[in-house]
Length: 428
Image (cartoon, rainbow, N blue to C red):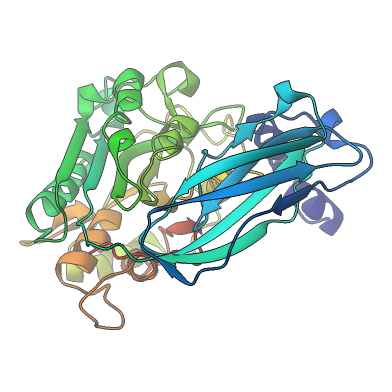
């Protein structure tokens, strides 16, 4: 995945954007523990084999044991991983084989199954970063006795910053409303509901890191929701940071909460049903060319449904000293930075960024538009597209993307990096 090469060959992108995407590529391979030199040379693919898998359409045991063989006739093996329904069993980086210093490796693994169909995939990587073809098997687990899942919700929101010129109006209210929604309206779907909230001054790197403790106690069929609202920005190295309460907006890396840390809250936890909702109100510059819909139109149309626009100081970024990439390109870069050479944490990520903070004010709602769309879609069942009484992750994703873009006349466009094409689960 090399957008920098594609853009350079197309010949219409700016040198700054091409270089930014090249840096994004370098960051991705660094996160995977490789260097450009390691990925150079002759391309050769290792092999993965599942030796003893006996096809059984349906079983009532929650574990199976499989024998795995990995080999490469040219290079040393680097790591392997197992995915259940596109969720990595051993986290996004898998199990390392580097200390084995070998081109052949065999192992017996015990896998805990999820209720329903399980798509089991196994692959390995060699020292050059080449991944084997994924061995894939299917098996359905139907437990003898049904058990209710637990729900874990972590809400991280900042409205009030130490730099008060960057304060937001609804970020904390949005987080509180999300927490209250799932605390009070889950009916009898869950056995237990665990909610952790970090608001304003409690949003620090240490506290956010500690928020993983409860989800680590989850089970494979439990559900985990991570909700984040506040400022999000890129530093000079194009690293993304969520702004902590004590954020230094002129030096994001100093106190900012990295995307790796946020994504890490959902990585390597037992639960496989995971969703990350992020309203990253971008504190950088707004695209000057993004004027297809004028603010006056927003004012006229927004007045009909209570839509308001709130602005704030742009994090010391001016037209002269900004990156020159603009908000939309910056956010696309954020998405590029979030992509890994593997399939990530297995969570579905729905996120929105805007240069201004859009909020819907009415007798019923006082929320940011992104959160309003989520709340309205769930509470009023508007996200239930097929009207079957259940709202699946795919339905919520489609509804939020369309609703936010509609309400803001295209000025705020949620994006979704759905890593689980085959794993759609009920969220409401």
